[in-house]
Length: 103
Image (cartoon, rainbow, N blue to C red; front, top):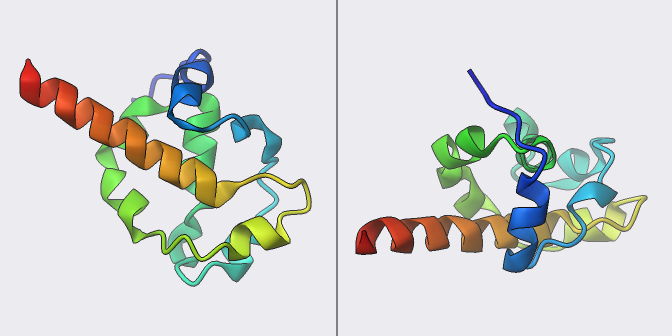
């Protein structure tokens, strides 16, 4: 079962994700993403928005699939930054990994 954590968006802002809520999940990024099969990056963005931390952690390998090509950023009708969000989530996962390793 996935737990929704409304404070998660605020927590991940420190990893460079200040535009998480700008995305309204229209799917334009999926249409242009070279890795768009299986709803990437739309699904990961939605998980971040609703605070589904466990889902992001269990599917963290997907974060490193992003080529950071910028197509999603160029085509987003809201000016959101899906690529930046993915990069921020990568930083978040590295932070969790380092924290766990030092404990």
